[in-house]
Structures are given as C-alpha cells and as structure tokens.
Length: 287
Image 1 (cartoon, one colour):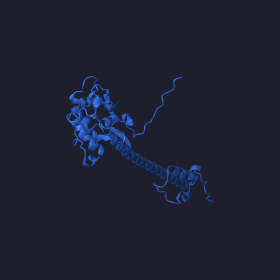
Image 2 (cartoon, rainbow, N blue to C red):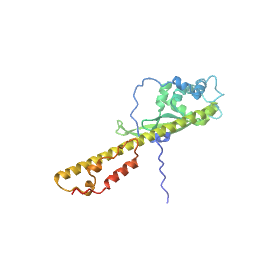
Image 3 (cartoon, rainbow, N blue to C red):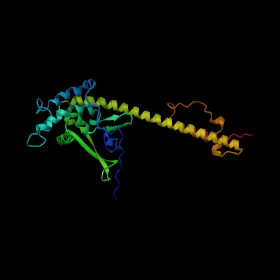
Image 4 (cartoon, rainbow, N blue to C red):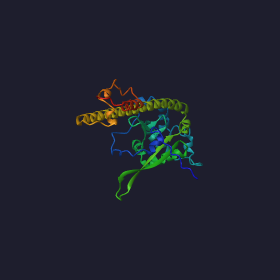
C-alpha cells in the first residue's frame, strides 16, 4: 500500500514558504522611484567589492570573473547583451538581496514571514523589459549562478472570460558559485554568517511578540468569563432562584482577584490554571 506523502509545513520566514503564501494586493501602477543603495548599505564589504566588478563586467572584468557565464552555451561564448544586462541589474538586485538566505526578498517583521520581490520591479529599476529580465535569470540558472523556482497563485480577480487570473511567483536565489567566481566567497560567508545571527534575533523577537499577543488574548477571555458568571450569579440572586453549580461556584468574594495579573508576566498555562482553580471551588453556603 502506497503511503501518503508527508506534508511539510515550512516556517513563514523560509523563502520557500513565500511561494505558497496568499496573494498580496496588486502593486501600484506608479512608484515613488527606483530603489537605490544607501550610503549605509554601500559600507557593506560585500556590496563595496561586488558592485564595481558587476557594473564593469562587460568591459573590464569579462573573462576574469564569472567564467561559467561566458561558457554557458558550450563551444561558443555568451552574447555581450547578457553581461550588459548584468551591469544594469547589479544595483537593483543587490539592494533587494536578503543576505541571510541569498534570495531576492525581505523578511517582514510585522507579519513574521518572508516576502519575495518581483522580477518586474527589478526590471523596471534596471531599465530593461521583464522579458529580458526573465531570460537573464534563466541564463544565470543555466550557468549555476542562480536557483530559480516558480509557483502559480490563483487570484480572486477574474478576467473578461470569467476565469480567475493567475499570478506567477518566482523565487530567485544566488548560489555560492556566483560569489566564488566573483572572487568574494570569503567575504560572502562572513556577511551571511552575521546576517543569520541578526535573523535569529529577529525570529526570537517575532515569537515573543506573538506569545505576548496570545497571553493578552487569553487574559481578556478570562476576564470576560469572570464578568459573565458574575452577571449570571447576580441575576439568579435577584430572581430568588439558586444558580446552577457551574455558575454558582464563583462568588463575588472569590471572583475578586487576590493579586493583579500582569499580561507580560503570566503565561498561557498559568491563565488556564487560574480559571480552572476558580471554577473548581465549591459554592459557599449563604445560610
């Protein structure tokens, strides 16, 4: 009997998980301007050494760096247009590169997930067409300098024929061969190691924030339950009828908290134990 394939749930911070993430809103027709490297980003040792080499690859450094790109077609050399495209997309790609994973994208601290950049935005900032950008990424992948994976996401919008529109989401990751043939493997490993440490700290911060939100939500539910049972006990006393055991088990004296519960100090298990403790108390004899 064939076993069912195991479903592997990736962490939202994983770039592969961004391929299956829900579709975002359509990007605006016009942006404020192309993304440029800031002065702080240019101080990065990897960007400081890689940018001049990439922007002069077709004239000065062709044949010296990225040799696999020049022999991707086997017996004949690669056309000059490929190296010219590399010069144009060098800065737009470096400004969008996530150093912890080597993927074109960024980690969203608010949502706690990884977001992929689109090739259309990179092509627009580089001043080339999306088709040329797609061919260039395919050439990098053929040379072993990039890893490419795509997924099709169905949108809620429909076209003129009544069918749902489909958006192709592509993940592009620059491999170690790219930085090795660029002569920057040692610097890349140092930069990536530091970026992974920062990413680990960011993930811890996101997890702590989520835990605090869960604790706050549990505390609010506990307060609502206590308030609801107080009201039921009060209505039962007005009507002169005995409240059910589950409702009369908590009296006004018992509902008054002996200590103030701070959301930032109490854990989810402590909240549940506190609620069970109050509900488990026997009713007090009023006679």
